[in-house]
View 1 (spheres, rainbow over the protein chains, first blue to last red):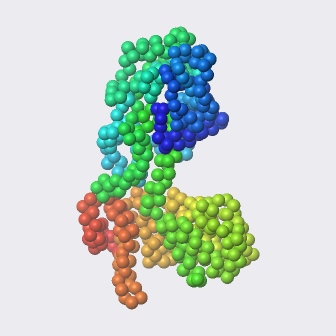
View 2: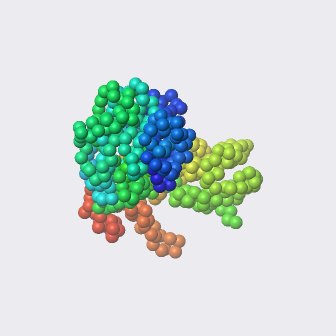
View 3: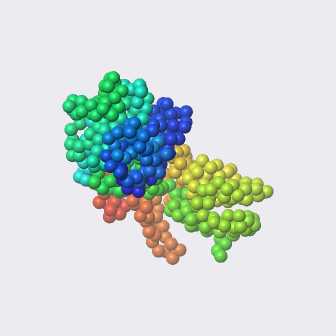
Length: 286
Length: 230
C-alpha cells in the first residue's frame, strides 16, 4: 500500500488528524490510540509515497539509522505514525454510539432484501462479505497472519519490504505492553486458520530484526482476510428496489489493508451520502 | 417587483419544502424588502450581507445580523417575522430554533392552521413525530380540508409504524384533491408525491396485491380494499 489513489490519501489525512486529536484528548488511554515512530526499510531506492504529507515528520532514514536498524536495507523512511488499537478503540466507539441513543443489533444478513422495508437507509460496510452479499466479484481476500506478543522494550514500528516494495514482508508494531508481529499477504486465499509453520517463520524473521523479541510470549495469533477490491474502495450511493420498496444503500467497502488507516475519512464521506439520502426521504412540508 | 406578502412567504415556504435553499432565501429576502415595516432592514441587509445565500446564512455572522435586524424591531412579536425566521431555521436544519419561532407566532395567532402545520413539520423533520401529530391535529381541527397537513400526518404515521392509519390519511388527501375544482371548474391533479408515499405505506403493510391499483392510481379500489371511509 505505498501508492494510493488521491481519494485514499484524502481519507487517510482526515483519519490521521482525527486520531491525533484523540491522542491529544483525555480519551487517548481508553480509546487505545497512541503515537508511534515508524521506519519503512527497502532493499533499494523507492520513490516517496503519495501519503508523505499525511504523516508528521516524513523524511528519509540516514545512513547511520540504516546501519543501526537494518544493515541489509538500502533505503528507508521515517515518520510519525499512529497505533489505533482496535481491541480498545472499537469498544470505545461502541460506547459513544450507545450513549447517543444508537441501537446495535447482531444478526447475520445473507441478502439485503432481509433489511428492505425495515430500514430507510442501509450502509454496507461488509468488507469482504460484499463478495457474497452484493455479489461483487471484483473483491478478493489478501490473507495475512499475525500474532500478539508481550513487549517490554520495542518502541519503534518497523516495516521491512522485500523486492516488490508493495507490501511489507515483515512488520513489528508496538502498542502499549504488547507487540503485533507479522506478516503475510496471500491474495486469493480464503483460509482464516493460523498456520503453525507460518507463525514460526514470522517469529524467526522478527527476532532476526529485533533480537529482544526472543523473550516474548505469544499471547494470541490469528489470520485475517484483507478486503481487497480490484477497483479500490467503493464509497457511493445506490438506490435499489426490493419489489416495490425503494431503499437507499450507501456502500463503504473494499479498503484492503488500509481500513483502519482511512476509516474516519471514509466514514465522514459515507455520512455525507447518508445525509443526501435523508434529503430524499418523504419530507414533512411546511 | 411583486409585493404580495403572503404570496412571497408561500413561495419561500415552497422552495424550502423542495430543499431549494438559494431560491428560498431569495424569496425571503424579497418578502423582507416588500414589507413596509422592514424595507429599511432589507436595505441594511443588502449592504451588510451582499451574498444572501445559504453558505452565508450558515455563517454565524450573517445569521446574527439578520436576527438583530429583524428582532430589534420595537413592535410586539410580529407573527410574520417569526414565521420568516422559522423558515430560515428550517433551511439550516436548526429545528429547535425554528420551533421557538413558530410557537411565538402561534402565541399571537393561535387559530392559524398554516402555522400549526409549519410547527408540526418542523417538529417532525427534527425527528419528533409524536409531538408533530398533536400540531397536525390542531391544524386539521381548524381546517379539516387542509391537504398538506393531512399528508404530513400520514408521513408521521408511517414514521411511527402505523401504516394502516397512514394510508387512510393519504387516501383522504387524494380524495380531497380529486374533488377539488379550479376557478373555471377544471378538475385538479392528484399529487405524484402523495401517490408515491401511499404506495410506500401499502408496501410497508405487506399488501403486494395492491401495488397494481396504486400504479394505476385506482383510488376507489384502494378505498374499498383498505376499508377507508372518506
